[in-house]
Length: 103
Image (cartoon, rainbow, N blue to C red; front, side, top):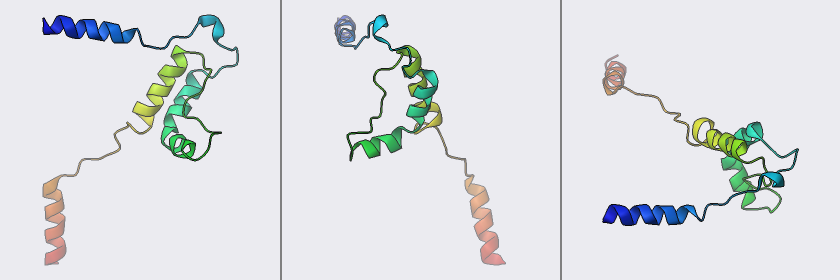
């Protein structure tokens, strides 16, 4: 019964998703590449948008799905969501420190 209620709630919430009429897209509207760029510079754009009304973090109007896909990739893969860490092996660090102390 709980699964059925959760499914009904999820379906009800999908009705709140924003949609755009296909004829509302301007011919020169930003597409995939601009979405990729805007996603990549999201942290800087967001910070600047806090202090000025002339900068936005998302282009409106845009060409829809391809812009959104580029924006998503820009944030998750190339921007803030990208994993920029490296693995540090504890044994190697301990050995390097031991050599410094000894020698």
